[in-house]
Amino acid sequence: MNDPIREAADALLGAYRSMTPIDPLTPKFTDAPLSAAYEIALAQVQDWEKNGDTVKGHKVGLASRAMQRQMGVDQPDFGHLTASMFHLENAPIPAGTFIQPRIEPEVAFVLSRPLRGPGVTVAEAAAAVEFALPALEIVDSRITDWKIGIFDTIADNASSGGVVLGSKPSKLADVDLRLAGCNLHVNGELVATGAGGAVLGSPLNALVWLANTVGPLGVTLEPGHVVLPGSMTRAVPIQPGDTVVATIAGLDSVTAVMEGTDK
Image (tube, rainbow, N blue to C red; front, side, top):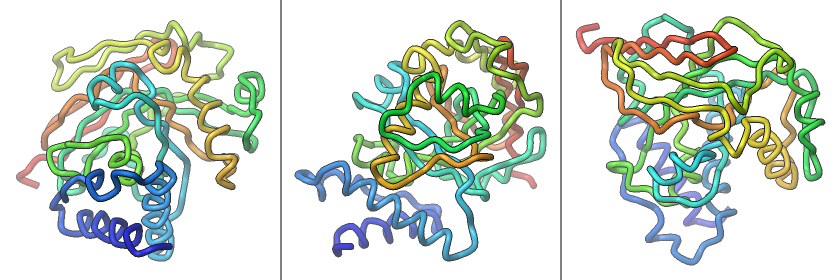
């Protein structure tokens, strides 16, 4: 691992500890390939694992056109989901866990068999999914004011922050993920709508993309792991005390409760 990559990883790890964002990394890595950004992200994951955290899945970021337009990028990315990122539905989520959080409604896939690319097909991906759950992903950025390019968000573990899973599993055969509509409410107000088709045509396509992207890097999507394929709507900023509900047709709903500042 060369020094610039280690320094960038340490800067991002420091942002987690201090809850103070850092300047964008892109100007320091103008000519660097995106593989360098993934090296920075992996260095952080390795640090978390050394300190007792464990990888429980992966996420696809920036999978929808809405998210790509919002963040000014033109391709998906991926990040790791660790055990410490998962929060129980309806249980207060400590607001101090995040720097500048936003929330996204997603379909969560739970795998029953391993997936490793390249060459994974939609049929193989569907067969590997044990069930789907409604989910809310809390994205966060360790980069000041979300001033990120694709290099920044990849290096920052795809802007991962937290995950809340719903509690009603559904079989893929029972729902058309392409047509499944989604309503996102914050404190009872409808703030965004979307559909599964916004995620690379279908959330399953995002799962295929992920398996075929991480496979050449030596990563297998493991049984029992959670895969978040991407947001069905734009990301919505949230504050301490907010209650967020995502309702996805065919998958029921999921609720995230942000702890208030007085707790």
